[in-house]
Structure formats: structure tokens, C-alpha cells
Length: 268
Image (cartoon, rainbow, N blue to C red; front, side, top):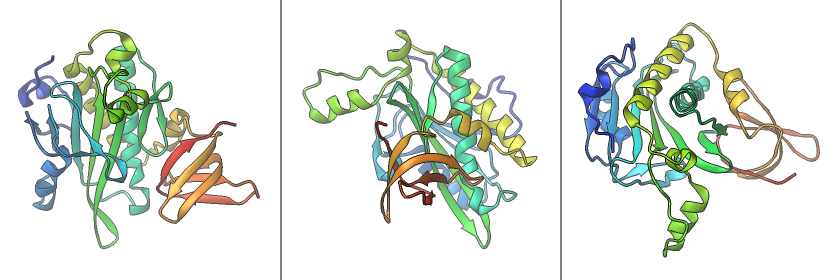
């Protein structure tokens, strides 16, 4: 198991904004929670929290995210993107997801896809999740915290006694399970932070990540069912708009714009 520390992560990191500074925790309720007070107190963007264990990590729809200590990368990053219109806040999720995909590929050789809106997938099983918390002030984004949980060296038990554990083993996967060997977490995490830093600099210059993100999406051009607060929507995932909203073409030809929801990929 790779031992992490703030000093090890920052040594030779060579980023401009992201990872300045890094706070490491052996155990914490949630890395995103660790950044909320600093965010509210005005700490500059770029601060990173990472933990070897989370006791109350969250996924989408308030699902829990748990992993044995030292087996995953559980981290959050603080942004202050005053330049970004509120309706394009999803682009922060995009740049972090893309940085994770690219870090995984360069460090392990594994190619993964993205399932709209924020899951990293490998052969139909979830490898990582990205979750963004936002605070608005008037007509701008005051701060954003983007959290990521990546399964690195977990071996999910397909023969577990618990039904929940068997279902998790069916739906989730780790880098070690894909490659057959443990993956060093430190170089992987540094590569992720460098990738976020570079893509955030591009975002500041007005470079949209939507095309790159769309190219990685496994959701597009497939039949989907999207569970939304207003009810389910079924149809073809026909595309995205610049905000990252999913455009679903229904059987009657109507196109629905979906800002948030839980997607199930249906068979054609």
C-alpha cells in the first residue's frame, strides 16, 4: 500500500494553482466537507484535501462511498471560478473527470469512458465518481468543490455473503482488478492534479472542455432512461449543449434537455 502525505504529494508537483496546498488525512468524514469551511472563510482556490479513508463519503443522490483504508484515491479540490457563468458550472466536473481519465491512461495504460454526468466506467462497471458542490453569490459562482473517489487497489468480492457486497462487486471495479496488479497511488494522484491544473488554465482562457468530454462519453448515441426529479425520461442520448446538459430525443421526436439525473443505458 502506497503511503501518502502532504509533503510527498507536493514534492515535484509543478502545478500553478491546483495542489497549493494539499491537506492529507488518514481518516475523515468527507474530503469535500474538509474544504467547505476554508471555502467559506475565503481560502484561495487550488487547495486539495485527500484521505486514506472516508467515513461519510458521498456519491450522487446522497449515496455513500466507502472503501477500505489506503485502497482508493479520495480527494476534493477547491475552485473559485468567478470567470465561469453559473450555467456552465458542470465544466468543472468535466475537467476533473477528463484529468482522471487521462491520468489513469498515462499511468496504467487503462482506457476508461465517462458515463453522463459524472461516473468513470470500464466495461460497464464503475471505476470512479466525481461530485461537485457549489456556492453562489448573486449571479456568480462563489466557490466550487469537486470531489473524486477512484477505486485503485480494491478487490471486490463476487462471492461475498452480503447481498449488498455482491451487488457492489457486480457494479464496481478497480484498477487492480483490471490490470491484475496493484497500482501506485502517488504518481497517479500527481498526474491527476497536473491534469486538472492544465485544464483549469485552459478553462480560464475560454477553452471549452465539452468536445473532449463528449468524445469520452459512453452515453451518447445510445438508448437511455434518465431518472430526474420530475420523472423518468426515455429516448436516445442525442448530444450535449455547452452547459453539459444531456439532450434526449424521445420516440415522438421531442428533445428534452436534462440538467441532472441518474442514467441507465438501455439495450437497443
